[in-house]
Length: 437
Image (cartoon, rainbow, N blue to C red; front, side):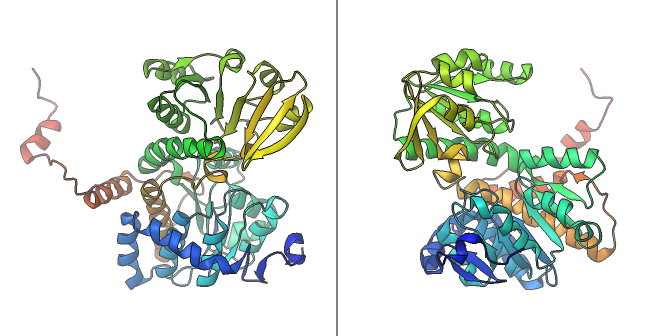
């Protein structure tokens, strides 16, 4: 396999073979300012960095990461580096890398292979992060872990001590791999931590998805029929924010309890076949392929806007959209106008990729502070277990409640919010089964 990707070979990139490949190293100063902004809003990671830069618990350990290259991710990477880790990184989606941030990290001396639009070189970038034989993997979507398990089996079985997974889609893939007996090292389910999915997924996805839609279209949300496919953590956050901006919100679901929750929260619920006829804006947030397909496109109103906020671009069947269209043009950045054979126009945002990252900046720094604190502390657990000789089970491991509570309490303290405490008498009352009426 070549060490130089096809595009870089044409001289369009800044590259030091074996060290980094980014769009333009001269963007580093711009990237540093973005990172500085994020750092000022991520107090939990700042506290962890200050604590562990003195003891450097990651000294001698290498971490390969595959996660969106944003200003917030850079804060996490620098925290790991200050705690002694060696880092090699790639983006986990072809359209989610901020080129200025990637350049700033490369200028820092971080080994990084990432640029916006690296579709054809996506797995080449992941392979390069594996070249330096990591002890730990940090993933978002499971592409890194899957690549290691499929193509670097000896490394997975005999060298890597553990990993973490950031997102719902990746956790699903990992649990399937584990159930099949094909998981070779323990992985912490960072996504399933309360301080991750109840905040990052709900409030982060909700706000950033609408941010991406507005940047790509500049439409008025008030009065629009916004259809959200999926009412899990991410979909519920999108629906909540859309409703707050005056939209009429419609939920499509396959799970009865999720649909019922949506209805009791003030949304309509119906099938996608019904929703396709009345929706103005469609957002997929399911992690499942073919949520929007041919019959839906042909039912949609003229001018309908469609986008995805799930991890992969499979939720909108773009080949079927192309098959029922007679022309397509890019009418705005991250906004393609498809003219259907029936004369109607449908506007696809961000090529069906994560609209909040491809068309905007991703989640706000404040929520990523908690998610990335979970990443840091989970890797710390893996390293401490390795140093002590503890054998963790080779499975997808839930994070301890104590870690969630620590992160939440630290976040609240940074916001100058104090909590009540139960008295000894109250604690005794809680644990006394003889207490009654």
